[in-house]
Amino acid sequence: MAHFEEVSKQSDLHPKPAGLVLQYGTAGFRTSANKLDHIMFRMGLLATLRSKKTKATIGVMVTASHNPEEDNGVKLIDPMGEMLTSSWEDYATQLANTEQDELLTTLKDIIKKEAIDMSREANVFVGKDTRSSSASLSQAVLDGVKALGGHSNDYGLVTTPQLHYMVCCQNTQGKYGEATVEGYYRKLSQAFSQLAKNASNRTDDQKHLSVDGANGIGAIKVREMESHLKKHMQLSVFNDGSRGKLNHQCGADFVKVQQELPTGIKINPGDRCCSFDGDADRIVYYYTDSQGDFHLLDGDKIATLISTFLKELLNEAGLDLKIAVVQTAYANGSSTHYLEKTMKVIVKCTKTGVKHLHHAAQEFDIGVYFEANGHGTVLFSDGAEEKIQQLANDANINDERKKVAFLLQNTINIINQTVGDAISDMLLIEAILAIKGMTVQQWDAIYSDLPNRQLKVKVSDRRVIDTTDAERRAVTPAGLQEAIDDLVKKYQKARSFVRPSGTEDVVRVYAEADTQESADTLAHEVSLAVY
Ligand code: NG1
Ligand code: ZN
Image (cartoon, rainbow, N blue to C red; front, side, top):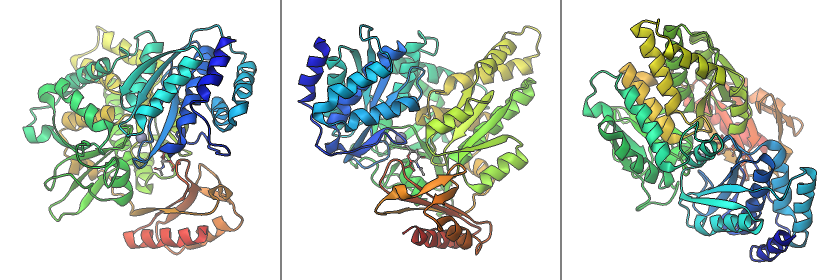
């Protein structure tokens, strides 16, 4: 067929370096930008096939999130705005690694295995972050879509969650919202304004938030959003890309791992601040106290704030809906303890990677999922949304319950349920703090984090480490887990685990204990055991 000739011709313009092998990992493909041109072209092809197969619009986002500027990457988005289904990750890897002269054979194999009707239309939404390499790489994706005869819509610079949102809107015929960036701003800002009406008179100080945009797309987009928020919020945006380098000593990953302020931000003690990551799907909050000490409110604290708020609303509404919090092994032990023992909500632990948390959260009426690094959102089941809707429409309920139903409805509308979203999470957190009349210090005081430390270890082959029990225990290499157990025993309230990273060529080490010194020493000792 003519399309295959075109694929062959175009593919020669996006040649694969012979012998290069890459894996579709935790968050798609991610490596140095100069190795990715052929990957992008081929992901354009794969997205077109996936679109034909699902009879729906598919998304392709060009970004390497929190990685340095020199890197890039690509993630595919499935019809409901969720991550690409795992069964197709293998196709992505096959297509990425097949040598130039075998590309058509691999492509035809996938078409045959999936029985794809090639006469069907295909539609692909493409977005990119602000990296200097993203422009040509997203063009390579578009070339791939075109070569296979698919239609594309190039959204240009968008956050990752905005693209997820638009794919979902498109495939639900507008039920979830309008498939435009403007539609996204409108939906979220309207919900925010409605929620903010329920906050008692706030001073300008209370409305003020400092945002570290990681010198990335989030800074641009939060500025665009600001005009929609009118008098409800006052933002100071730092690290907006005008001077600094993407993710360099700033952004959510830097702040979370280093447990310190990003560079380029000017704040006073007590000021409420947050940092986005490079593609604005993660957020962490923080402040400094009068002694100049830094206080981090990470994904665990965010999950606690949101789940407490929702649980209180459900109680007031008299709605019997099952709420759960989904975390990973990186969740601070204090957060899990607080959620289970004090809040009495169900807590589930999954493997690292949003797709795992997302799936686990789908099992509940309301699933609040957050990685400790600030990547997360809230999922409402159809049944839960219906019950909330019914309550809101019930003419026989008192004003108090009506108000609660209204709050729940707007909470649903402010949340981007397709994936973790820094802007949407920020608005929800700001609304909750405003409604509860809570300061960032009061939020921080809900529980105290156990001191912890994260380290990266370079090894010759990180794949020798295999884990079990949601990555909390190492199965291989032999003796490693026993060595970790022996080290952990030396400290109070201690816990430690290791796992190979899915986005970088490193092994990650995590340790927590009763003091920072113990957590630091334990992390160091465990990293020596990994060598
Ligand atoms: P890896 O590199 O597999 O640890 C990191 C994050 C994940 C997830 C992905 C995708 C940590 C410890 N790991 O994965 O939580 O966010 O990146 O961005 O933060
Ligand atoms: Zn990200």
